[in-house]
Image 1 (cartoon, rainbow, N blue to C red):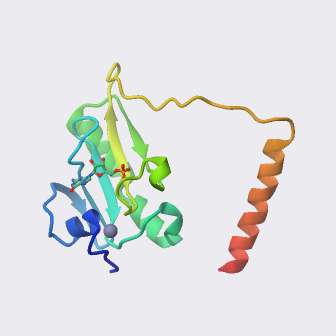
Image 2: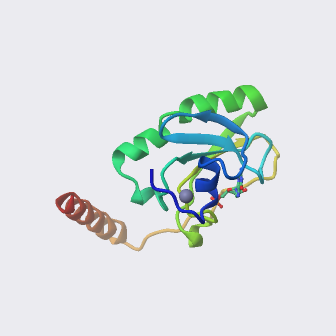
Length: 146
Ligand code: 5GP
Ligand code: ZN
């Protein structure tokens, strides 16, 4: 399993930093976030060091997401939350502070003051279609590069 000796989540996976683990298997670890946005805030990380979601192989992604439904159910049961957010930041500019890919499960309650409603923009005529074409071409190239 590739590890980065300077990475805090690799240190948790390796047992060098303690964490309150809630679930683990051969590929992933889920544990309590030390700086919770709400009580019961969970993190899920792969055991292998990997920076962004886009760096994962599809099988690694599948393994990382395997337990999300059960973790969500457990979160609802344990915290009594009315809902929860699945958050995943890629890159510093997007708010990623630990460069080891991870999902946040954040319990939500009415009036908790946590927000995520960003201001939606709009497209000039034809721009969304242009971008969709660029995406389709990018997918084709990525498939060919594999
Ligand atoms: P990000 O901002 O990268 O999406 O999220 C990183 C998360 O990791 C933050 O919510 C932060 O509280 C959590 N975190 C950082 N260092 C540690 C640590 O040593 N232990 C635990 N359990 N969580 C950590
Ligand atoms: Zn790491």
